[in-house]
Image (cartoon, rainbow, N blue to C red; front, side):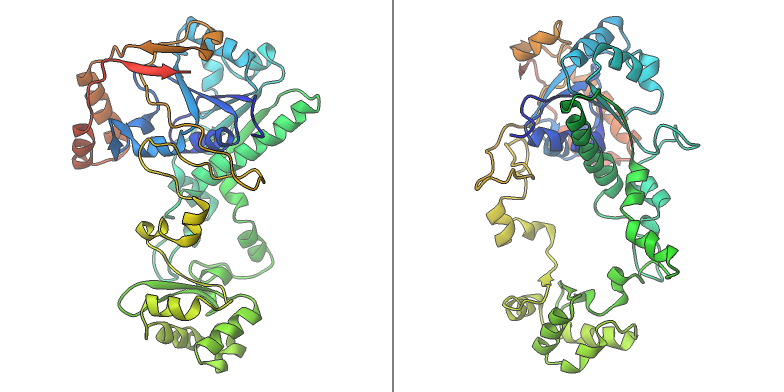
Length: 416
C-alpha cells in the first residue's frame, strides 16, 4: 500500500482529525491514536453505542492503533516526544497555543525530529481574530458562506446533511497537504508545520460561487445555476412520494430527456429562468411514481437518477458492486480509496476498542501485544459519559439509551 512504513500520531478528537488520519490509515499508514487517560476521544461515547462503544467512532477510526498518554505530566510529554522521534506525521486538533503550553509544540517537535510533519487542524486557523474561538461545522459553514446558500430561496438556511467543513476542510484537505509534505521530505526536505483551518477549507470549496459573484452575477440562496435555477438541474417530486434527480446540463442529455418525456417543445428552454418551464417539468414527474420513472429513464443516457433514502443505498447495484458502503458496528470495513490495482487491497482492521489503556513505558513497546486492566469503575464511566454527552447537546433520553448498553469491562486486550 502506498503509505506502508509511514507512522502517524493522531492526537485529535471527534470527526475532522479522525477522518484525516482515516484516509492515511486506509492507504497503509500506521496510525497511532493518542488519547488522554480516562476521557479519551469524546466520540467514543456518542450514540448509538454497539458493545459499549460508539458506532460513529468505529466508522472513522478503523485501521488505527490506540494508546493513552497524559501530556500534563513530564513522563507523558517525554514519551510523546520519543514517539515523535520515530514518526513521520503528528496530527493535532487543539486550539492555537495549547501544544506550546504543554511543551510539545512545533519548535520542540522539530528539534527532536527535523523530518516530522506537524498538522494542526483548527476551526479558524492559527492566527486572526477568531483563532481561539470555539466552533463546530455549522459555525464554520456559516462563516464561510456555504450555509447561507443552502436552502430554498424564500426560506431559512438549512444545515447541510454532510459536515463539509469538518470532512472537507478538516479532513480531506489536511490529508492532501500531509501527502504533499511527505513528498517534500522524501525529496530531501525537512518537515513542516501545516496550519489547517476548517473555515479556510470551506471557503475554498465555494470558489465557483465567489467567482460568479466577483464577475457581477447574483448568487442567492436557492437561485444558483446548480441549486434550482434551471429546469435541467433540479430535483423533482414523483407521484406517491419519492424524488428524481435531473442533471441534464449538456444539450444532448436534456434533449434526450425531453424526448423521453414527450415534450420536445422544452428542448429550447433548457436554460430558461421562466418559472413556467420548471412547473411544466414538475407536473410531468408528479404524474408517475419514482419506480415508474426509474424503469422508463434507466435505459436513457440523460443524467437522471432516483434520489435514494439512506436505507436504500446498500442495495443499489453500483454501491454493492464497488462495496463502497462501510459495514456496521466494529466489523472490518473497506477503505474508500483504491490504489489502481485490478482488485483493491483487503480489509486491514477495525477501530481500536480499548479506551482506558495504560501509558506505554517505551516507544519501542508499541510493537508488542499486551493486556491491561481498566482502572476506571463503571460508575465513573457513566458519570463521565453523561457529562460529555450533555455538553455536546445530546438529550437525556438518548443518553439513557446509550448508557444502557454500557457493560463493565474488567480487562481490555490491546494488540499493538
